Length: 233
Image (cartoon, rainbow, N blue to C red):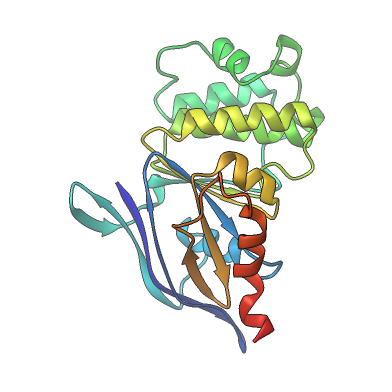
C-alpha cells in the first residue's frame, strides 16, 4: 500500500506554501516530515486529511497496483492540540467512539485503557481534567480502534513529559504495522529514534532523504544541511 502525494499546490494570497509537491509513502513505515516553522507541514496534513481544499494536484491511495482517490475514512489525524469532548469521561468517550466504529476487536475497553497506559482513575475521569499528554494518548487510542490506513500526527510529542513521550513512542511503533504513519516534528532526535525515513518540506516541495540512515554519525548535520543549503546559495 502506498500514499501518493502528486503535484500538490496551495497558496494563501500571494504566499505559495506548496508548489507541485510530490512524495510517496509506504505501509509499515513511520515517516518523519521535517521543515522550518511556516514551511507548510500542517497545511499539507490538512489537505491529505481533506480538511483544506487543494489549489492543484491530488492525493492517491495505491493498493494491489491500483490507484484511487484517497477517501476521508482512510485517514486519521492526531492534532497537536487534540479536540475531545470535555464533558465525557475517558471511558464514556471511548465506548461511544468504539460503538460508532464497530467495537474494539479482541479486548475490552478496560483492557484497551490499560494497554495505552491509563489507570482506573484516569478512565473514569472527565476529559476536561486530562493533561495534554493524556489527551494525546486518548486520541491515539481512537486511531487504534478506527484503524485508518494512514495516520497523520502533527507534532505529537511536543510538551509531553518523559514518561508519556516514551509510552507514545511505543504505541506508534505498534500502530505502524500495515499502516502508513507520518509524523511532523521539529525534534531531530525523535525523528532519528522513531522514523524509518525522513521527508523534508522546503521551498514548497517535498524531498525524500532515502539515503539517510539512522546509523549515520552525521544524521542531524545532514538533515540541517538539506534544510538550509539552498538558503546559503
